Image (cartoon, rainbow, N blue to C red):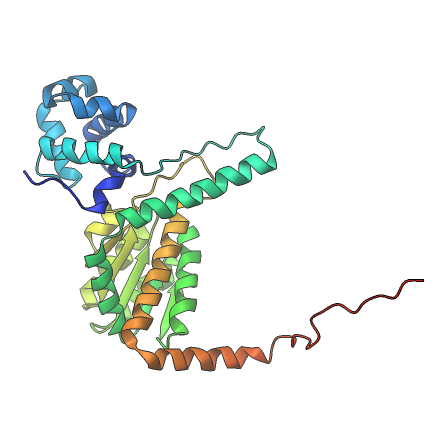
Length: 301
């Protein structure tokens, strides 16, 4: 058996937590048992883990396969590496009586954890493929709803400055019609924190039926991921009790930045000249900086 060395293994605990939103109920029981005591899960047999989760041994085996492993032994080895890697795993631990300083530190720590986990989870091959598809697209459409709709708008802003015919849509009626009108040379990027939004899934299916390439930014293995050509997985832990999601939004924004920078590099120096023209067009809308930057000395007396 090959020892897992991929950085994607480092955040397996995070992947398991995220997967509980899409796994069958019996496999969710296995996931909860593992999350309750990951160290113990590494040490026990498949029969012992099945007994602790009150499921059958085949259910544990299916759980491992759902996470992309060939079997229980490979899963345990990857879990051991995940525990040893020390990847930050921050829960939503802001308390009502926290001071502003404390809650600010916790929010910042969570953001830092998000980027650390994303860095370790990135799939370079998938990113390379996504950049290739985007670089050759006739048109780029970004679909997202709710918080993901805001991310779609950010993506549209970044890519139209690179010279693409880029648009963002958050209304389900509109993006379903746009999906139906796409062509084989178009690329659609669908963004969803949980990958279970029915309208987004349906629009992704419609776009694929036209021949357009569909890239998902969502949880790996989610219903949305399963209907797309390519998935950039962001298996982030998100506190479902928090009204304003943070970790998924930050990871999605960072991925959009990576795609934009990668695409700009792929397209070459002409992109830089186009960006300079765009900057020049908005300079006249800014108040000019004063030549004298030092404050005048105020005479005393």
